[in-house]
Image 1 (cartoon, rainbow over the protein chains, first blue to last red):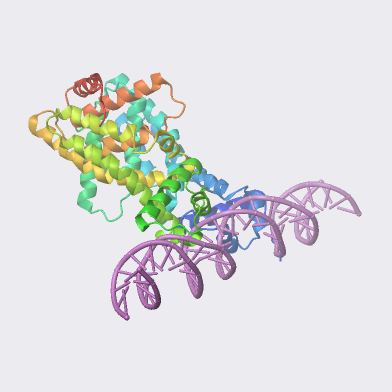
Image 2: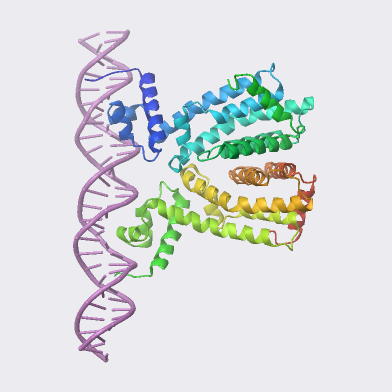
Length: 213
Length: 213
DNA sequence: GACCCACCGACAGGTTGTCGGTGGGTCTAA
DNA sequence: TTAGACCCACCGACAACCTGTCGGTGGGTC
């Protein structure tokens, strides 16, 4: 029996299942047959809504990053929060949670998902770096920071955050602690912030019970 | 007429052609048929020497990175060269030339080669970061640097160098200049080196006519 | 009752990896 | 010096997938 849905409804259904499958098996190993079988639609239906498998991937990346970026943008724009706390919250929000569930997020970093990972990183970077750079300029103006290269500083900080806090598999809490401390220290230095100032801001975030969103 | 070669000879032949093809068309778009046709061997021959297409990719990554890493290691170990110059030379040598020709190197960053790129980066990082970290410790001891986290500092610097100096396509010389200056400035800050000290060291390298090797 | 568009599924043309068999080169023994 | 045995690089047909195409169909709406 043929089930008809609106294009948008069906598209989202396809993206949901594809996201699941790409996370489970990797982009290369998950086939379009897997997708249509799990949904129960025909081959032609899938290709009626998406021109190619890669277009499905792009749509997923779009969906996943859009949410993260707009959340970070909201944090950054909220001038009622102290500058250093806005910076920390934004960076943390991007790396703790990328919009999807944790299992999905964990699987992204397997070699089979290199393409997905690269596309997500590129998209995230393109969206967030300019926002962070603005924040750094704000800090330059009020004396919190002393950075001659706000854009490049933002790029370096975000790049490292993205890459370094990727492969968390099999890391001990002590290693994680050290890694985080090092990241904070280096970020302070890059921005020319007072030593310990960022660290203090982060502490304050975690004192409030809602570190994110 | 059947041509017989030693296993090693044939393996290298396969890797040479595969490297060419992956660079030309990308890992996904270059098929094993392309490889065997260009060489003029049968399907079975290729799979007699390599268990899978991915194993071929791994072997190529291995070959390409091994050379770069050992060159950087040689520079770093040469204590007759001033510390700051060793650091600069090593980092530059890794990013200017990754062992292969320029055309090959340029193609690595296209989306189709995400897997190759990721594998190369991981391998390069794993090989080089410990060496740079040792160098930083050396600088800590003699007062050139002041770094509480040598490993993480090395990781951050190398990560950014790898990622940032990847997508050079369509960048103007001015942008490149600015990007490089920013990178040098941030590296000095991360390492706690005196301002301008790294910059001076790099200038000296380029005064001698042989900046690399 | 006509029209639109989501849906269908067979099919073409490609892919990777397998497997039983073959023959060139070498080593040994008569 | 020659005959034979053996090893292993080589072969190519084949199975089992894969992605993307296309002419056709029917449910819902106007």
